[in-house]
Structures are given as structure tokens and as C-alpha cells.
Image 1: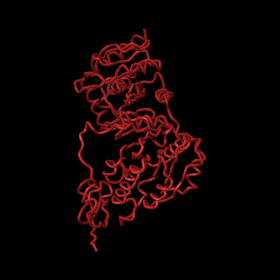
Image 2: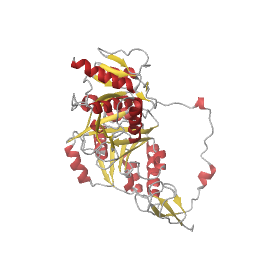
Image 3: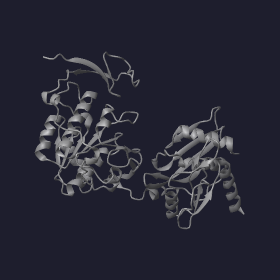
Image 4: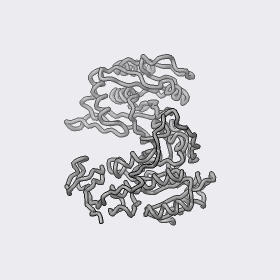
Length: 459
């Protein structure tokens, strides 16, 4: 009998230690180490002998065009690259209450309605609870096979008998297998359960969608190996207090990771938003200082969002900086550039920045729009409602070019904007309808343009 030994694995990063520690030396998390019993691995005879495969030339490898399994939800298929590939494993993560289980049930309903077999495995809810959620959603067929099971070995038996085209696991943290003696949700259980499920998906050719929890920092819970094991990693973002949800892919072996899907949560579940720019600008208050429209680019889709800034008198000695939807460090950098490279004084003021609609801005193309919104609030001058702003700002105050400017300007023109402030070296004039491109060289020119525009409207 082989003797078992114990190791202490971190629940945050998966690192293993030979003894119990209060703090993980790899990730620095406190109280995250748990004891796991591991048996020594013994290679079977067939593994030692090999599988009989021989090396082949890369040019001789046959390419098979596998038909994708369409989910029936256009925004999800956009992010996946046209649908799920048979035999692939997709990991869907997100904060509690964001709508992961709702999206999974809607995908199961659309695939089942398309004539495919679906197996929905729930380790957190009973079949009665899933039925209650399905009753409030639109068009969820009653033929979906539900299985309330947390043991992977029992799940695989039903998988083999049913032979489904799509299998959904909600969630991977509740699954456990007999070969590991630790509790469900531990690093070893998540690792082994995911490996068994992924092997079953590739063996049977069924598309596997796994729902996973996230940590308090927003990262996927479990070992880092979990993200390497799957083919696609999707992140469901959104504020529970807002209706909009964004679906992004941080890893995709079968498509681009630049696409984004936009959903709206309502009483009937998640609804697709085919034209998100109009929804983001629906409640825009025109004529208010500190409001500026910027055309962003999410993959191949342009989005127009509203950047809001409020510059107020500092009530205490230390000015406050509050940012929502944009990185704090980026805002601090742009405040320093605006204060040093222009005549707008913002260093000694309280500054509040917000991106309306719950959108998070990550690309630098919103730099010029944020600088102009800060100048508008500080000078108490409203930006004209028919103006959109796009450009990256350097430390010298210069405005630099951005990618796919023509696509951004065309989207702004489609929504009624007649002028777009852009970098001077933006290439050829984009083809757009009744839209003028106004070149801006630096942040000082942007502030002067705002003053001149206000003086022209007053006269």
C-alpha cells in the first residue's frame, strides 16, 4: 500500500507548501492554506509503453472544418467567434448576481430549441429552483435534461448515456471526484474535476460550458491551471444596480479576444443589446458642463459613451480624487498633464470622474475626452452637444493617434454628431455623412477651442 502524504495548498493561487503557514509566500494571502492528502502517482503500463503516435510534418496535418454549435444568442456567439466548437471547454466567470446562471439557462434553452440535446448539471440549486427561474425566462423548452449532482463520476455516467451536444456545469466549485480526499471547492478538487470533465468533452465531442466563481479581487477562483486547461475564458461584468452587462473573452483558442457582448438584464432574463451606443446615451443631459462623448472601440464594434467630470473647490487641505469606470492612475496622470501643459488649474481642486452606464474604459483613446470634460467643468463651459472627442494624450500634452479612427467617426456621425475632435495626424479624412473632423494638437489647444466655441455661441 502506497503511503499518502499531505501538502498545504493555497485556495487563492494553488501554490503548495510542505507545512502549514499563516500566509501564502506566493500570493501573500492570509489564512488561505488548506491541508490536502495526496497519493503518490503511479504510471500505468500503457502510459509507460506509449500510445503509438508518431511525429508528423506540420504540413501533412489534416485540417478539419468543425461546424460550430451556435448558442442562439448573437452577442455570445460574437464573443465566441461564431459559436462553441464541439469538444471545447468554456469557462464563464463573474461576480455573484451578475447573471451567469441566467445566461447559462438561456443558452441551454436556445440550443435545445434548435434540435440539440442539452444536459444541465447543477450543484448549487435543486431542479425545482431551476424550474422557477426557467418560468420567468422567455422560451426555455421543457425538454432540457436537469441533473442535480456534485460527484463527477456519477455525472459522467449520465453524460455517456444521454450523449448531449451541450453540457453546462453550475458550478465547478461544487464538483468533487473520488480520487481526491479534500473538500469540494479546494484547489485539488477543482483541478481534478475540471480535468475529468474536459477529457470527457474532448472524448465525446460535446461542448462544455463551466460556470465558475470569482474571488473578492474579481479573479477566477481556483488554481491558475483551471484557466490553462479550458479553451475559452469568458468574464461577465456589470453592476448589480445597473441593467447593462458586458461579456468579454480573456482567452479564446478559436477566435478573437477583442470582441465584447452587451446585454440588458430585465424581468424576462438577459436581452441582447444590438445598438449599445444609443442605450448608453439615452439619458445624457445636454448642456451640462463636464460631460463629453467619446467613441470607444471594443473589438470591431464602436461604442459611444459619456465621460463625466466634476471639479469642485477642495473642502480640506488635501484634494480628493474619486474615479468610477476609469483607472485612478490614468486620471491622476491626465490631471497633472492638464495642470502643467494648459492654463486650466485643477491640481488644487477636488476631482470626481465617472463613466455613465457602468462601462469601464481601458483604452487611452478617451484621454482627450477626459481632459476636455475636466476643463469644461473647471471653466463651467458646456461642450456643444454635437461634438465627440477622441485621442490619446502624452506626458508632453500632445494628442496622439488612435486605432480605427474612421470606424469611430462613422459611428459618431450615425448617431447625429456633426464634429469630432481628433488627433492632427489621423491619416485620410474618414468617409462619414455630414461630420467634420477638428484636429487638436495638444490639451492647451483643446481648452482654447472650448473657450473660442463658447465665445462664438454667445455672439
